[in-house]
Amino acid sequence: MKKIFIKSLYFFMVFIFTPYSSCFSSDGDISKLQGVVMEIDFKNNLFFVNEKPFIFDKNTIISDEKGNTIPLDRIKKNVWVYIEWSGSIEKKNAVAKKIYLLPRYIDKKDKNLYPFIK
Image (cartoon, rainbow, N blue to C red; front, side):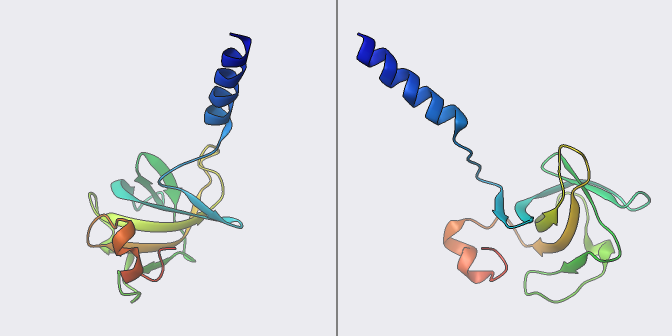
């Protein structure tokens, strides 16, 4: 009985404390996220993807799915994007370094078609 309890406790701790996410990945100080633009505020240089706030500035590079630079006004509500960002979402200082507009959700089997998605 004690062994079963210890194994169950161990499994529970591993499950709880193992960081996992299907949306985030980290590459040094740069994190990546794929999602839908839920809201955009050009006045405050702020947009929300998957209910998370991101700041964009004059250094943010905006590209289409082929990597061509496009104007900021192409980012609209309900558009799929892939973001490379730094900072902290919790502290609300996540700054988008690169934003790629996507034609749709890109699943694992199609990621090889988009070299910027790693």
